[in-house]
Length: 101
Image (cartoon, rainbow, N blue to C red; front, top):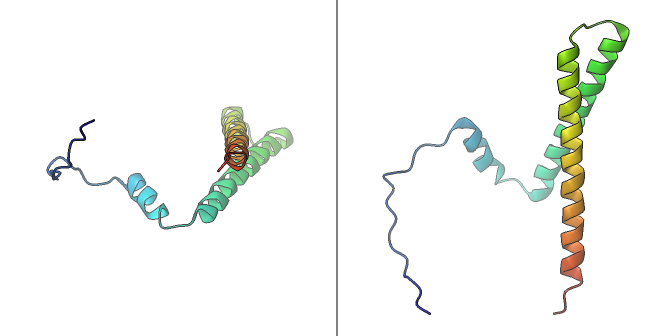
């Protein structure tokens, strides 16, 4: 089997990072635990925003049902994704622990 050797890369086609990409690069300096805590806090914030929107609709403080439904859907999707990621991470950990060395 022949492996092609690495060659020098040209930097001419590289474009500068956008603001969101810049944040992603900066977040790599954080530990995994810090990023996980941050993202779980984001999910909690979405859930509390959804609950506040539903409360405002129920008490008559707001008539904006569309944004309340959007907030509810965002929170539901974020919670569902968090549960799926947690389940997959636990399953991956169990699989790694059951491997024979």
